[in-house]
Image (cartoon, rainbow, N blue to C red; front, side):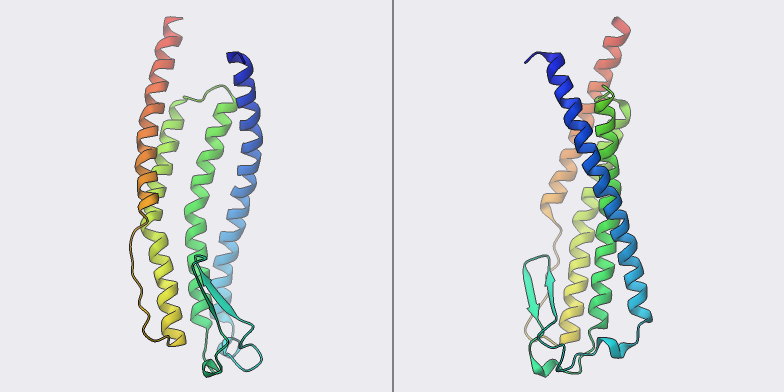
Length: 200
């Protein structure tokens, strides 16, 4: 496969991927708005709506990061008010969405420039650097939000002998620093492209 046909293939893939990422972008915005509205609505709804009784015990449950699943099937929980738990989950969902939205937006713009035959545009270096900053921020904020939800669950349901351990997400931190390195590579690519264009 020659260079031109390879570039055409990359442009075609970039176009399709940009459409998919644009969809994710708007879904994330809707989800963030929904989470914020949900958090406000939870505060306005009467506490009695969130009190556990014999009818809803066993039908409700919580899952945190897909690792811990807690089912409310203990009759001793009857009368417990789980309003704070739903509020904490809504806040966490909003925070995660607000961190994801700018990252997806930067990816969409990078794909757009690739489709326009400007993969090493100067703006792309800044966009990749922005993704790196967001990844490092998320490495601290997301675990903090998860701890907030976990502590709220423990306090509300009076779960005994369970503690919460906060630690930053190392994978996201490394991803952030890798984005900084990649940003430098793209900045250098922009410099080489500029030199080549002036030479020609």
